[in-house]
Amino acid sequence: MRASEISLTALDVEWRRLEVISENLANANVANSAKGVSFKALHLVSGPKSDFSAFLDAKSATKAAIDVDKLNGVEVLGVEASSAPPRKVHEPGNPQADAAGYVSYPAVDQAQEMTDMLRTSRAYEANIVALKSAGEMYGKALTIGER
Image (cartoon, rainbow, N blue to C red; front, side, top):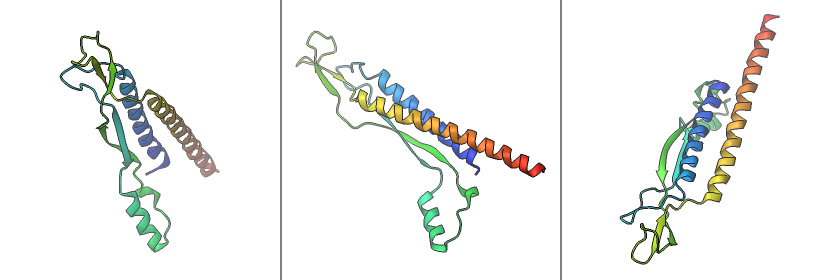
């Protein structure tokens, strides 16, 4: 797989991660019903499309160069709901409060989500730069080949 295709797979994963983070932030202050939790914080799980560790182990055993055509990039492996208990806030006047006067909100750490958003946007930007650099290198290679 070429460098540009690998960067494109990473762009797809990081875009999806931004979507999950924005969904968490949008639902951070939505009170859950008294019957139970209606929203749980989500976390995107991503990884290599192929078994990268086995690929490296096989290559290190033979001391051969890595075949970049066998690299497949990354993919979204799934979206998991957080197992953290809901955040309880004492709001006795809220119609969604339980018998003790507490309202349950999703366990979304807004500071952590914002940090993850910054990290994800930087990774997205880095993949755009890598994609542009790969395009420039391919263009230079074509120019050199014309001579």
